Length: 291
Image 1 (tube, rainbow, N blue to C red):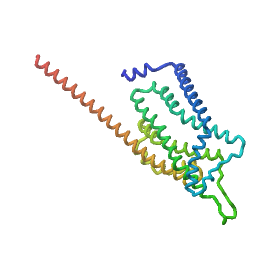
Image 2 (image 1 turned 30 degrees about the vertical axis):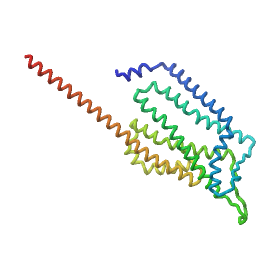
Image 3 (image 1 turned 180 degrees about the vertical axis):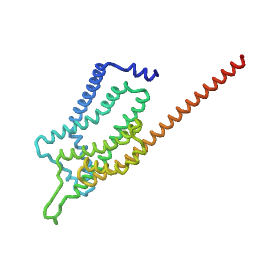
């Protein structure tokens, strides 16, 4: 039995101990989320004002008066529940490092040392890629989408009917949260495909062969996950296709490293076999000399 097998054997525990450990990790995760939720709820209005900033940029792009930035709520409880949604969203983002650490601590004892070292970079890359996708939504796509909607307004003395955009707080929050989650999930594509490639479930050639289907699927997913406007749909589909190409490159890197390890292992075996053969020849020559 190898040293890694001994390490796994030592970390094994009865089912009840695993359940107790799972309960402990869940309690830490829930407690972290609850603390982050309370903190975000205390500053829910400030967070909502922060999320409205892309709307102000869209108003500036549309050459409208800054006083045009106005949102409403039509039900007495609407803004209260909107603040709860903001607190849940912010609490999940703030508590994610703690939740991810608890998941890793629960899973790590059942992994070999090299598997833990291979899994840890993906655990770090996943939230970073999610934040990149969210930042892309905040600084570019939300202003673009709101500018697209503002361009549909009908105002001025030459029009018979004045039509202005006056969004509800819950609908605006739902729009920006949907975009952030959609882009954040799409940006996980390189992580998922790299893990599958390491497990041998995907190959770079297979990804290349499915490229045309992936492009169609990207536009279908963009149509489902984003609002029904071409700006946000194309804006989500194009990064998805780019990330798919990055995933192909990552799969090629994984395959290249696997081939290098196999070549090194075969070279070590060949060296060992040669040394064994040389040792046997030297033993035979010594025996011949003694006789």
